[in-house]
Amino acid sequence: MEQDTLMPNMNDILILLPELCLVVAACLLLLLDAFMAPARRWVLHWLSIAVLLVAMYLVMAGQPEQSISAFNGMFVRDRVAEILKVFALLATVLVFIYARPYLIDRKLYVGEFYTLTIFAVIGIMLLVSAGSLVTVYLGLELLTLSSYALVALNRDSSLSSEAAIKYFVLGALASGMLLYGMSMIYGATGTLDLAQLHTAASLHNSTPNLLLFGLIFMIIGIGFKLGAAPFHMWIPDVYQGSPTAVTIFIGSAPKLAAFGMAYRLLESGMGDPSLAHQWQQMLAVLAVLSLAIGNLVAIVQTNLKRVLAYSTISHMGYLLLGLASANSEGYAAAMFYAISYALMGTAAFGVILALACAGFECEEVDDLKGLNQRSPWLAFLMLLVMFSLAGVPPLFGFFAKLMVLQAAVHANMLWLAIVGAVFAIIGLYYYLRVVKVMYFDKPVEGSEHKPQSDLSLRLVLSLNALALLVMGFCWGPLLDWCKSAFPAV
Image (cartoon, rainbow, N blue to C red; front, top):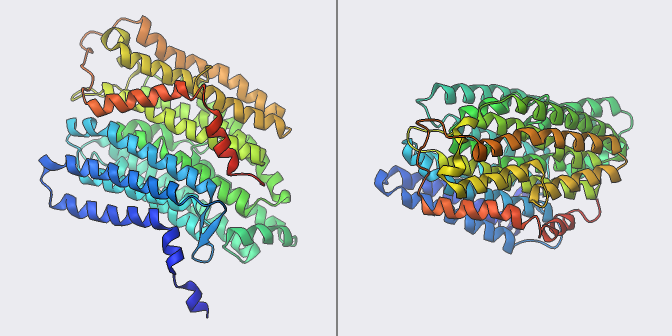
């Protein structure tokens, strides 16, 4: 009987259809690339985008009204997973469109970029649908191992190799801590299933210290994957050392996965009130550290990618404000913030990719000097992105910050909301510095490089950046969609 329950049935296969579609497609694309002439690699590019769009359609078409599970609860398909998957797939489509000219100019236009990224997306989709600690770890490792290889895509660059090694070593350390925490929790509760873990955590009052011990190590793993301080040390080096086409992916879709992992582990698994009070305080400390370190260190950076890296750390602090609220309003606000940051991050690095050309990386803040004189439209798009990241109304980023601050206030964490508001003002400095350089500084001699002329890049980038302005006026439906995922938490 037990053997029969472990065998997948047709219902399990249908629930996993989007993920299975991507697995088959990635394997076929890998084989296709082996027999395809480099001159025809554009076919692989558009096929990869088509595959992601098909997967997005399957996710949305099969969106359940209530939570359903497969493989004895190891894989969960609910509204939370569906929303995160849709935007992770959308962000990856944007990455592929923005990255193509950059990869061609640097002779990195290889099939491995597409297949590794798709495998990373599969890891994201498994992670946000995890119903078991095993599935969490499986999805996490598929995502991170693919990311390590992507960072080292440019094998001729010592900076990329160094970044990949640092990412691998620190990522392995964080994964080990997360796994150690999971083992402690399993030892205390005797189950790997997150739903059963939630119940067992409230019953096993005889081993609270062991549960708390495991929880601490799990928080460390979550903090690393989010890029929250003090587990942020990998972000600046990886952002700077990676090819920008890889940085744009690492800075967008995996943040949605990190939120999904945090929600599954903390709320679905460790959401018992006695434990929730413990991890609320831990997340609040991580949020303050992230806001302080991210915003203050970003001020002194001159490398544009490092500015955005420390900006990411500060934004993860705001996301943690929502998670620390530990209620439906906070989770909805945190998801809303993760989605907004994914769209803002792709747009920011998209402008950098649009300005980069053969022999010119556009990685320093000074490279943007006089951009308004050279390319007024790209300067305007970058202005929208910077203002949205800074939280200037009426752009999308302002309402994302407002929602998490409001959730913190409603959760009786007024002090945390005040800290967030103060650092939002401090963070204005380095965003406005980028705008000032573009509009008020004269171009550096010899830096007047011609932006990319790729039509698909310029068109989609324009839509991406302008969406930040439009969503500033029409953010309600998206927030309602996020709230519908947490009706009774």
